[in-house]
Image (cartoon, rainbow, N blue to C red):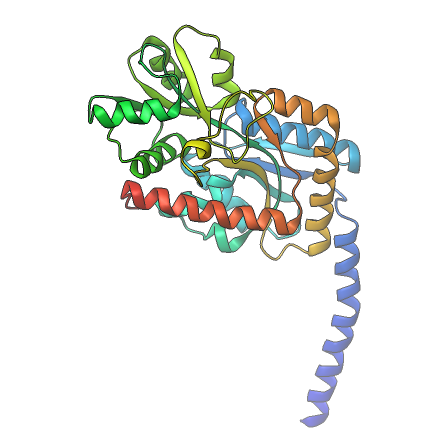
Length: 324
């Protein structure tokens, strides 16, 4: 019996000795075939744009197809589940807003745990959110708006592009910290929400800078502040919300995630490629002109931002008293 056991152990050791180098070699050679990039939004918009910029760059760099597959669903559940349930080999990767991974499990029942089962690789860019109000309000900055809202509790409203997302939870957290009371008006999406603001039917909207900055010179709306930690290159005259309310930063970056357990050489190779891509001046200018802050963070940096955003989303969900 001892002889058989020793024989089995010896055979296992030989298998491991042979298999491990082969596995490491396969990881080092990634990608050797098509890579699927799952995107939880429809074609068009910031997330899809950044995913396609990255796919084009990666395909040129590695000489293998990087195919963007759009699978829009509530909270990005479909793409999250597919990424987690695919082999952790780097051939099915997720490109999504960080909110898809961090916010969705706080407000929806989902069959996987994306925070534990996905690893953030790096970001391509942060789509800035801006505070916009209808121009007919007697305010010219965020301080004046909050004072006006405080003096008129329940008389002003704000539109949201869907619920349990950035445009919904960002304002709720802001209003709670500022001690103001506005009435929520739900809309199906951003075009409808912006339409309501332009028409004057609503007073306030917290939306994408890339869209709202196109309306900056409009006589219908006024942009008051930006939700990023620093002022953005596309509109350097705009103060940050944190200049009025210290510490308030709310938004979501767009970038790559892989299934936990993906070999480190693959994760590192993908991260370094994106860092190289986002360091290119032409791409940085293109992103900044859209109100997007270029990414390309290191492993430590992206994890630190990930944890900070996780706390912000949890605080916003608590402020909204949202139940799954």
